Amino acid sequence: MTAVIEARGLGKRYGTHHRHRWALADCTLHIPAGHIAGLVGPNGAGKTTLLHLITGLLAPTTGTIEVAGGPPAATKAQLARVGFVAQDAPVYAGLSVADHLRLGAHLNPRWDAQLATRRISQLSLDPRQKAGRLSGGQRAQLALTLAIAKRPQLLILDEPVASLDPLARRDFLRDLTEATGEHQISVMLSSHLVADLERVCDYLIVLAAGRVQAAGEVTRLLNAYRNSTGTQASLEDLVLAYMTKAAGPTEQLEGSR
Amino acid sequence: MIWLTWRQFRAQAIATAAALAILAVIFGVTGPHLAHLYDISGLTTCRTNCAALTNTFVTSMKADAIYPALFIAGLGILYLTPALIGLFWGAPLVTRELEAGTFRLAWNQSVTRTRWMAVKLALIGLAAMVTTGLISLLITWWAGPIDRAGGFPVSGGTLTRFSPVLFGARDVAPVGYAAFAFALGVTAGALVRRLLPAMVITLAGFLAVQVIMPNLVRPHLLPPVTATQAVTVNLSTAITGHNGTYAVPVTGLPGAWIFSNQTITPSGRVFVLPDVPACASGTQQQCQAWFATQHLRRQISYQPASRYWAFQWYETAIFLALALALAGFCVWWIRHRRLA
Image (cartoon, rainbow over all chains, first blue to last red; front, side, top):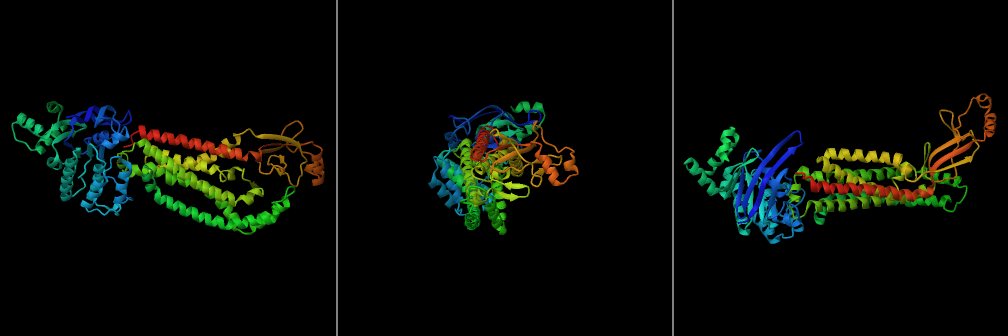
């Protein structure tokens, strides 16, 4: 399959030349289309930085990235190919739910108005409600609706369930798998909780200390882990093992790459 | 993009329209009576020696406190409007999106950031110019009788429409200020990313430009005219300087912007009263008689009243050019400096 995300030597440095910090370094990824990819890592690991580089909100300091066949956010057509639900699902507090759908319709050439209206009524959101008065879960659903109804090839979600209670979390993820499965969208979502990703992802990227510790299909990662350690492991065990190695002394880190 | 710009601007547009309506009522109701006072003063048909008629008109205008108050208020409103536009339309344009995080929503729709910025700058910039233009039209019309009668008398002179204070509150110049203040606000917001500092920078920048322009730039837009002519110093009307200079008030140049007025000696030096007995210990008549023997001349430097419109267009063009440059910078900055 062709790659939906192709990154080579991607790095992002924040701050001035003298006082700086690498939020992401030497990141090489080749994610085939058609997956629901999970991006997992502790807080501050560089997950948001990576997602912002993928959406083109940030420009890389080093390396190159291509998303759905082109440089991120370069053109109108390129922007139309990628949907993004940012962390905390930002929406315009003063605009109503219906206004947000109008916004989507005006700003996206492939906007699916039927899909958007159907989702809003399924979620029993009041179109007249101001977005600023929605609950965290409702806001996330509204943001997801906007991102799906623009009919992207790739959907990026940054910690979409972080602020949701367990029930809303389950509903959101189920809804996400259904909606993306129906429209054959590739998905990449981040979380610092493996449990969220375990349920929906078939591809996993472990990010720690600004570097990719592991990336691959979940089944392959688990097989490889079992073969090297000889024990049956859960996804949680596997992720923890990679994170521990990343945090540990250098000689142990060598073994993880 | 046009729809989103309008939707986000709608509340401010409605508030602005309401403010405009209130101003239109206040100035629209009082304006015709002011024009009536001018008509009955006889100034409309007066061609020469109109000082007495002007006096009549000014006295009748000042008899009702509302006209001087509105004259000054109109002046304030026209300087305030561009400043408010810069503060409340310009500065929040980018910072509001950054502080609420909504740029992550807006910039991931199928609209490039270049277009997002360009459409917002163009539409709201246009609204700023139209709003200020309408207010200027209203106030210039309202104050028309006073401006035509030679200006508004204040202590130490007359505020003509060419005077540094009034010039920026008449005709087209405020339109240029509005475009500039708006673009300045957007630029400050894009650079510092936070609303409050952006507002402070916008206000400081606008004030600085409003001080620099009339004092350092505007006087040199065209080379001033200088004229030298023989005068008689009349001791009862001459303006005495603290270092012994005497200036004879200029008459016959109505509406001109006068930079300097000096009395010079036949050799061309600035006249300073020497220690002569006629003036040191004599009567005023004796001193006056001594002055008459000195062959003094008056040297003035000024911009003639006929250049008023040329200056209005120059001023407006300068500020529009500055606004365009800032707007171009904003588009470039938003495109090349990723703000996330």
